[in-house]
Each structure stands twice: as C-alpha cells, then as structure tokens.
Image (spheres, rainbow, N blue to C red):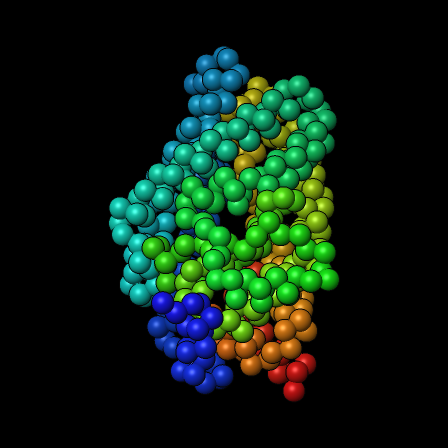
Length: 383
C-alpha cells in the first residue's frame, strides 16, 4: 500500500499546468446561485424577525403566559421553528440540490437529513442556553445588562473555542489522527520556532459528504489542533500540503485568534448596548411590558442581526487581510512558490471557486481573497 507521500509524488508527475484559467460559465453560475440564495435567505430571516418583533409584538406579548421563563421559552420556540420552516427549502436547495447538480457532493439525502437533525440538537441546545443566559443577565442586572452580557459572551466564546474540535465537531464529522509518519515529520518541522503548541494533526473525514478540499486551525489551549480534510490529503502533494499547513500556522504566528477575540468583545459590547437603546426606545410603543419582556426576543435578535450584517463588509475585509498575511507567511516559510501556486489552483478547481469575482461581490461576501489575487501576490513577491 502506498503512503500519502508516495501518492503525492506520483500525483506531482501528472500535475496540471501552473496557470489558472478564467472561471467557466458553470463555475460562474454555481457561485451566482449560491450568493443569490444567501441574499434571499438573509432577507427572509430579517423580514420575519421584523414581523415577529415589530408588527406582532403586542399580540405575542398578550398571548404569552405571565411566567417569564415560559414566555421566553415560547418566544424562542416560535421564532426558531418558524424561521427554520421559512428557510429550510432554500437551505436544502443550496446545501444538497446545487452541490449534487455541480458534482461537488457525495452526500446522500439520508445523510443530509441526519446532519440537519444533529444540527437541530446541538444548535437548538446551545441557542436556548444562550437565550436563557442573556435574559437571566437582563432580569438580574437590568440597566447594566449589556455590560455583563459582554463579559458572559467572552466566557462562552472561550469555552466553545476549547470544545469545538473535541466535542462539537466529532458529532458531525469523523476525526482521526493523521497516521502518515513521513508527512507528520514534515509538518512538525514547520512549527519549529513558532511557539505553536498544537495537540496534534488530524484528518477530518469530509469525503463522505463533499468533494471539496479544506483545512483549519481549531481549538484553544490544549485542544488546539490542525485539521486537514481527507479530500485535501488525497489530492494534494506533500509539498502542497505543507503550504496549506504553513498557512494555518500563520494564523498563530500573527496572533489572529487573540486579536479576533478582543475585537469580538468590543463588537459584542457595542451590539448589546445598541439592543439596550432600541429596547428602551421601542419596547413600550410596541406593546411590550418593558425591556426585559421575553416576547421581545425577535426584536433583540433582529437588532443583533442587522448590526452584524452592517459590519460584515468590514469584518470580511479584516479577514481577507489576515488571510493575505498567512499566504505571505506560507511562502516565506516553505520557500516553494510552485507548490503554493499549484495548491491554490487545485483549491479553485476542486471547490469550483471563482478566481475573478466582481469586486462588489468580493467586498460583500468573500472572507478570503480571490484566488487570482493570491496567485498574483506570489508572482509579485517571488519572481
């Protein structure tokens, strides 16, 4: 049996030319349809939260029982169930129909439904816990709830960061340690001198669900690990995998995670403060008993969603800046421009990414630089 390294060496001899062709009409159509669904889904979600939070607020407040906890549970259930029913057809079309239509999915219909059900269990439990935690803070601290809620959100972020790779992710995907000793040795050398202390390198089994290739740095503290998709490991040479791995190491070297946590706290503080101002001004006119009325939950989430949507172009721009830093780090660390180029060209082809999106599309929707831009950087810096 060949090792991954031997497979990679064989693939290198049959590698496609190191030039990325313009996106085909099929790729353009796929990306356009995916973005259209995102826009429509977002508009439907915001519109329905506005209907529940603004137009139906008085009715929901009157219909709820007097016990605050029951009112909150009913508000959360009504909002969650109705939003899911509203967006489920689009989610199915985007996540299942389109992926199969463009030959990007290996997932069965049963597999899609089972993953969705698990998502309801995990997401519903976490969401309900966060909602009750938020209103518990609001009921206890009243006028200063937004300040305390920010501190609580920081704790939640740190806890979930530790639990994600070891508890949450394995619910949805099989995760195993990478067993190729030769490749592991090459990857570990890339962490030398970086102060990166990772728990291990793991194989994320994506191929049962998708043909797309991916990798990530996940976890905090003792749970930090690098995850390499089995789709990536099967189709990339060891040199290309080194480039992808070095890119993930770059996030640690440039301290993107702690920077993101700090920014998240600042934005959470601003968002919760904004919610407080809106509730103070609108709760009574909309028929709620006060800013702590659980029936106003749709209004609370609407304000948070609009706040996040407004900031998304800036957050995407920051993310693209971080990714450029990691691309440059990967080149500096591996000194392998050809492997860098071939890795990103493969990613574009395998994932059906548009290397030349419209600038406005890239501005609004891309949290990574377009592939063409990433290749141009390598050509400009490494002649």
